[in-house]
Length: 360
Image (cartoon, rainbow, N blue to C red; front, side):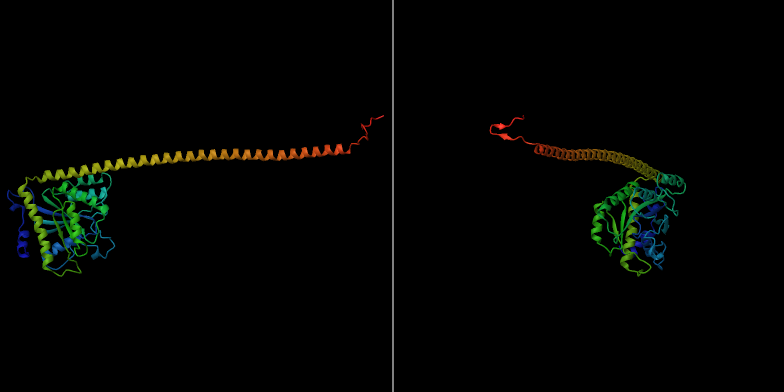
């Protein structure tokens, strides 16, 4: 579908036009999430530039446009960008790593449990629960949530990251009731076919690839414009289908999302406590093992010391015995020589024909 037919579909979208009415929904929240530095803010700038079809601006500030130094993670708040009266793009804070604390914050953002325009904190423990409870009066139940994962083809998906990424996508689906749409940015800088295949293996059906407009490169092309408008049309069609073909209760769904995240935090803390206890037990066992090993080493050293002392004593006694034997032998030899000398000096009686002469 070309631009002239796509624009009216997007511009006239309203939940009021759905069969059976809006069921309590007023607008679509296109919730962008993912790892930091993958182009969420640049994608928002691209969508607004295409939709307004005016001069390019940095509606969502990017790291590159601010001189760098933020390592691709400039967005610290949940920043809404109104596209039409019924469609809003949300630039959520990106993940640094997919650890349980940061993913918990992402799920709270995706569930629309934290207020828009407020700073997002990576809180540990049950701090996230307190913030969700404090935000109950400020979040809107009338927002229809569409989760969109943004991934840059400049970033390689490592084999050890695939399981965590798949778990993130499937948990986002369980939370929102919608399997996330995947937006691939920098599509000419990587192996598009291979990355699409990787996400399809994770169960993703809707994948869009873009080359974002930037301050340095915002030369309009029909292809880029139609790709962005086609993406927005797909988001609208999916939202309309779900509202028209499913019985919805926004208030109940908000409560279910809240309970989902609260359970996630509870299970996370329970698991972290179990891991902490496991590490503590392992440390205690290691300390005991080291202590026993040290005791065994000390006993072995004592045994060796005694054995060496015994060997030294035996060697000393042997040496003394050898010396004493030499002394005794020398003494015996001396006595024997003395006896021989005494015998030699004793006068001999003259000997007759028939033996020794008798003394007169």
